[in-house]
Length: 142
Image (cartoon, rainbow, N blue to C red; front, side):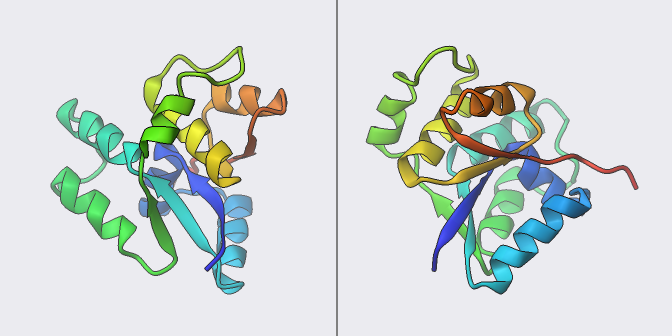
């Protein structure tokens, strides 16, 4: 199964809340229709935990159960934060995002030749410099 996209944490949340913009939703549905998978980095579990600890996770479900329920969905792949990816996240071309989780997501996308699906302006700006590919998504309000 081919993987072309890596959801960052916000994109994963938009997907689980059914708040993803129509263009991105169509892009991901198209990937699934072609038998492709969508990746999520293991570092996203850490970010989900941080959101839960701060009371900002949009569900009452336990954070690990919430994350695990997403990554076992058909067409979703969990990508590990390997030692090589962790090391690469320390040596990304400048100027780069200062958030360590976002650096790991960027390094994962670069290592696996994936396009990051994100609403993070700093990742999108980094992509505009040609260091990584990114697709801008938006959270829609109900």
